[in-house]
Length: 473
Image 1 (cartoon, rainbow, N blue to C red):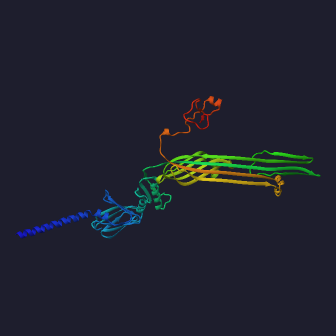
Image 2: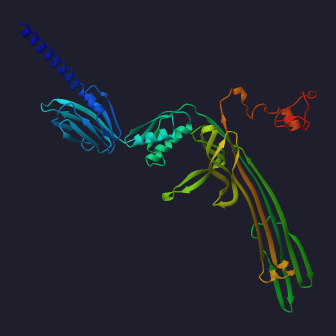
Image 3: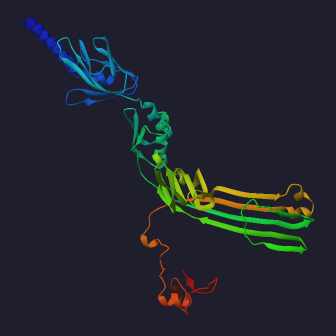
């Protein structure tokens, strides 16, 4: 009797141990969908997420890449929403291969022999950004810039320490997508510190012009017997006359009359141009400035219609700053100084004298560089006269005119960037401060346009060096 009870007790213990093992196996099968999906092998850009309200999991696959899905049970049927985006191949009853064919979104369902759903996946096919993400991290160690895709476009996000870091990531993304202009790259990067750059440009030019004109015109009237002769020799200049002033001399003897007209004039001119535009912009943003005007230009259109377009002139400045590391500033600059000129006039429309420079430089804050420069010296000499006679020594002067013209110009463009911050309003000044129009008495009696500052008998403290008198604004 005792042996029988012991035998039954041993059988019950073995049965309980088998039942526990079965419960563990059942629990493992219930957890198999999520575990098999997380441990499945893949090739390409692959990302998974938790189940949504419909029981499906979100999976992203890189374009032209594939992943392997381990199914929790044997599959009998597979349903793919759009086979043109993702193609599914079931090699075994519990293993499926998914191939990304085109960019887009779809879903896939797996069913067992009883028609029960065993797995549902929401699929998205996008560009493989793994290589670009690794490239950005290698180039910018410690960066917090993120990379995502929308269709065929790249979206940059996250946080950048400096504007140069954000610009570098943008350039890398543009190169990666074979889009040099960056039209397929959208940047939503937040920069921790946005520096402001003030650019000061100085355009200085000096021109010297010399024009000399010398010529002799002669007329002669004489007779020989019954024949009378009237000879005239006029020697024109290559350019317009400086002045119509003539020095005239004559000789008269009987029927002989000789007149000589001497034209001798010289003109010297000098032009000094100084423009100093200043403009401030945030790092990475473009800014433009123009101090001048616009003049109308008629433009002929179809059917005899004429429209008016306006051409800008004056002092213009445009630049895009980018603050680099260690306080270096990269500048893409375009500056121009132009004025209306009457040297060339077409149908009543004047021309423009333009000094323009465009370049990209890199400078420290407060550093200056000559962005552009020009030294020009034009010399032109012209002789007009009667053939052969103008080449005679000494006497040839009576049969020719000489014109000499020399134009000299020297131009320099100097740029200086500064890193600036905002200040209180009372720390800034304007040109109108202290400028007060004169009274009628001062304007009529003393010919002053504005008030003169200064009090007789009062002297400022300290030694004064300079011209003595009142300060006139």
